[in-house]
Amino acid sequence: MIRSGPFRRNARCFAGALAAALLLATRLLCAAELFVEISDQDGGPVEDAVVSLTALDGRPALPDPPPSTTKSIDQRNEVFVPFLEIFRPGDRLVFQNNDSTRHHVYSFSEVKSFEFVLAKGESSTPILLDRPGVIAIGCNIHDSMIAYVFVSDAPWVGRSDRRGSVHFDKLPAGTYTIALWHPWQTPGEEGAAQHITIDAAVTSVRAAFSLSLLPDPRQPRDRERSIY
Amino acid sequence: MRPVLFALLLALPLAARAQDIQWHGFLDLRIVDAAAQRSWIAGGTGKLRYGGGGTQGRFGGAALIGTAQLTPALLAYADVQFRNDDGASLELIEAYLRYRPVSLTPWRWSLKAGAFFPPVSLENDAIGWTSPWTLTPSAINSWVGEELRSTGTEFLVERRGAHSSIEARLAAFVGNDPAGEILAARGWSLGDASYGFGGQVREPDVYALEEGVVPPLRYRPFVELDQRLGWYADLTWRSQRHGRYSVMYYDNRADPTERSTYDGHTTFAWRTKFWGLGAQRRLGPIEIIAQAMTGSTLFTPSPSYTGETRFHAGYVLAGWARGEWRPALRLDLFSLRQIPPSEVPLSEHGNAITAALSWRPRPWLRVTGEVVRMESWRRQRILENAVAGRTDTQVQLGARLLF
Image 1 (cartoon, rainbow over the protein chains, first blue to last red):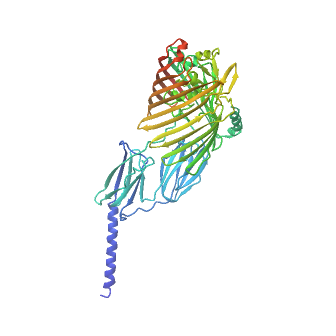
Image 2: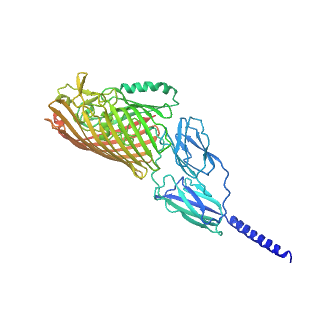
């Protein structure tokens, strides 16, 4: 009897912890995959859209934040490769000039501004990306060169491929807010963020979105077009 | 022209160290079914580049464009072209230095010094100041290619936004005092023979005879006669959503009483000023370009006479902007009025429809078929024992090798 009080309390605590662990395990074990399909106003697939997922109610278990990393953006044939790259706050960005000509890479974005003159074969010093936001990048020598960096602190974030598709896996059950961004997204027509609920009973969910895009200002490199 | 050459000479040591020197250009060969009327280039009153009838192979021209990125902010550009329309001619079309430092704010400025086209054309943005849509540019840009070149300095400031930008240009220039003479003497034309330094523009033989000169009468369009600065200003708004819109004003501020004599001919200064409007918009795969120009040019060959020509022109072009095949259709309207009218008035009006189909099977090759049908009315032709009103058709099949 003397021990019954603490024992019962410990038992209740243990049971509570077990229940929480079981609930978490259930959520994790019931992790679903989400396919987000993005099309434009003409029904064509939208490449290079950024899809961000955030937990609406905070209940889904969040993934461990990935360790900080360094990614590079190349210059080849007077094109930035890739055109769009996703970073996390704390990541670093390096520009590599693998082109046959010199480039003057710069950005005057509020999130991060910088400039580098890179001769062929040179790389920039790493740039610490410490704030979330969008960074537009250009070349002061070749105006046609454009790239974008999206720094996201969302728990889940992905970029659409050529089929306009983004895949997330191991999503715990819960309700999420899905936000989309694309460099050519029509201002004022971004649309409201959408919510999606992943039920513990399902393993795969699809969500389709349509974006109204502005004309792509990029033109393929052409000997006939003026170069400056 | 001397300051331009001097500046380029100064740039030579930098060019020797420049990492980025590039050479580009084209060679243009054509089969042409010419319009019946003799072309103005050959001294006639025909308004198309090729006249006199018949079908034969022609040399369309060759261009060599050199660029040198002397420093990250300093660019040197030069464009030399060769034609043989009115005798073999090697001409410097443009040559300038552009200083454009990088800016880490939305504002960016640049300074251009040398000899360059005023920013009139929205259609001639291809290599060597040619049109990617047609072989023959619009009436407006044909004239710009023939008679307008600014030797001086252009200051540009731009404000760049996420999806739009606005640019303002202001330029001061010399060396373009005869600009406008060909409009008065010949009227509008459609042709892709751009003139440069070293070239001479030919006036219709009937005009020379009226002036008491034994033809051929030629003049250099890019000379300074009165030591007065001309100027132009341009405002352009570019929007990823709505397209590009521009308005410009040009005034060469030539003293119309000035003249110069060389090679036995007198070249007059023509006070030329005009407003230009331009719009460019993409509608799905279709590119729409439209320009309009209105202005006047006048000269005072004697204290008792001032001759003025008021000119107006515009065009709308629609082109398919995707894939290897690039069809384009353009409608030109033009007119000018001589004040006061001479015994045989030089006033005119007309229109032209240009249909072109370009094919780019390889990056180095462009094949273009083009038909230009022009209706024009100009009483000057009766001096050639021809009727004032004519309809002319010119058909071309051209191959342009790009490098």
